[in-house]
Length: 126
Image (cartoon, one colour):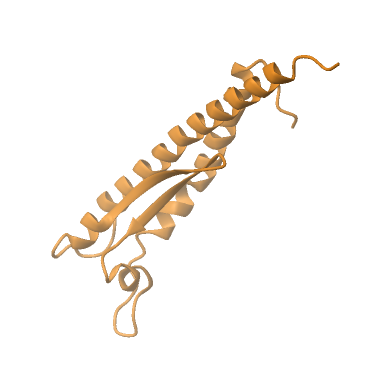
């Protein structure tokens, strides 16, 4: 007879919840950080403010233990500003900021997962 399975499963559920919570905190940091910089530090000329107002992010949690950040610029002309057009040069404001923060974000995500394991007395295999 095997004993302790229910306790192990409960512990794993708790660990998963802690990982998701820690990751959600880091996704929130990433979304807020990149969108704040996109709005505050861009090279395109602000005429109406519509593009800046259309920049934002959401954090979405799904079934099966997944969570994601969505960063967006919803102004209809956002891509034309980012990439340029045949008659206007590009003013990249979106992807350069995303790529700027990705290395720090990856480090923060790794630390978030490591902290969850440490909180439950586990060591993550490197």
